[in-house]
Image (cartoon, rainbow, N blue to C red):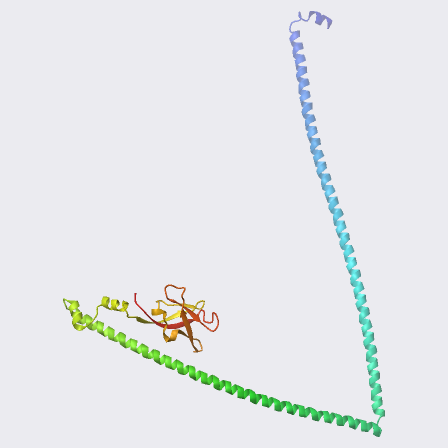
Length: 334
C-alpha cells in the first residue's frame, strides 16, 4: 500500500477503480441505511398498531368485565328481591292461615255453643208439660192470634186506602182527559175556522187570478189586430201593464203568504210588509208534527232598515229556532 500511495498516480486505472469502489461502498451504505430506516419505521408502525390493538382489546376486556360485574350485581339484586318477596308472601300466607284457623276455631266454638243451647231449650220444652207450662203455651198462641188479627185489619185498611186512592186518581185523570178533550176541540175548531178562512181567501185569489187571466186573453184577442192599442184599451176600460204598476206604487199593495224559518228568534220575509204590519194581528203560525197550532206574536225589528226582519216572541228563547212559520202580509211592488 505504501508503494501504491507513493506511486498511485503512475498505476494506470487504479485511481478510478478505487473511486468507484469507494462510491459503491457509500451507495451500498446509503441503501442499507435507507432500508434499515424503512424497516425501522415499518417496525415502529407495526408496534404502534399492535399497541392500539392491545389498547382496544384491553378496553373491550375492561368493558366486558364491567358489564359482567353489572350483570352480576343486577342478578344478585333480583335474587335478593325475589327472596324478600318470597319471605313476605310466606309471612302473609302464614298470617292468613293463622287467621283462618282462628276464625274456624271460633266458628266451631260458637256452633257447639248454639247446639248446646238448642238442646237445652228442647230439653226444657220436653220437661215442661205440666198445666202451668201448657197455660203459658196457650197464652203464646192467643198472642199470636191477636197479632194475626191486627195484621189482617192492617191489610184490609191498606187495601181500602189503595182503592180510595185509585178512585181519586181515576177522577183526576178523567177530569184531565175531559179538559184535554175540550182544549183539543177548541183548537180543532180554531184550526177549522182558520183553514176555512184561508180556503175562502185562496178561492177568492184563484177566482181573481182566473178573471185576470181571462181578461188578459180577452185583451190579447181584442188588441192583437188593432192599429191603435192605447185607444182600444181606453175603449174597453183596461189599464196597460205600466199603468197597473204605477197605480200599485201610488197606493195599491200585493198580498203575500210566505213560509220562513225562525233563526235566533227572528224571521226575514222576502219583501218588506207595508207599514211594518203582519196580518192576523201581527202573528205568524207554526203547526208541529202532532198537528198542534201555534200562533206566535211578532214585532218589527227596528235594527233592520230594510223592514223585512221581525222579532219572534216565543214563550222561551229559541223555542221555534229552526222551525218553519207561515206569515201573511201585503207589500208595495218595487
